Length: 206
Image (tube, rainbow, N blue to C red; front, side, top):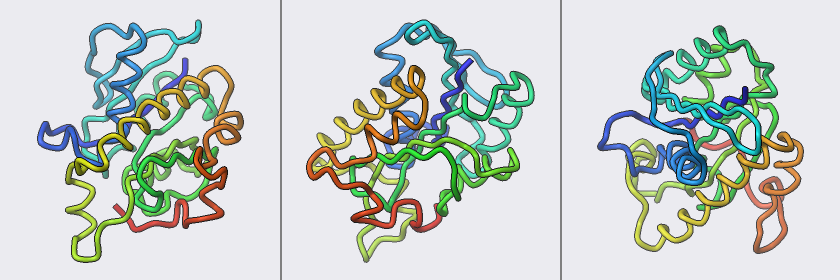
């Protein structure tokens, strides 16, 4: 079974904030595929279904962002999937709004949710799909920024990014992380990768 973990905060007031992009991607996947009704378990909301004949579980940890590792560690201990069958989907301030970056491993880059997962699993070999939300304005605290909603100007960009992220997750289910890295890490406008024009995972902690 493939586990797709969308990172976010469970309180309704955070549902449409930048920090909940991972949950938005899972919602798009549920819109496209029949995942049925959610169930509760492992400190998460869980949906089970099939994508292209592959069994998939969508996971929304209910622990708040900085305790995401608790939910993921419980799931991994119970289902014992290979590390290659787990994908975390999360926001990234170091990427321009709407840009995607997939990696098969690496440091958390200051993201508290991914950092907690890495600590809980005891290694950096966690595949992740980062969705760019852009940097906070100079006058705004980063914590306030990630817990704010998208501006009207950002909305169409992010809606397209959510759809493209769902495409990337679907391709990961079928083809694996290397295929997704090759296909989605380039800017569709310029053909450049995050490593060519930005700091990628080395953004501020959140």
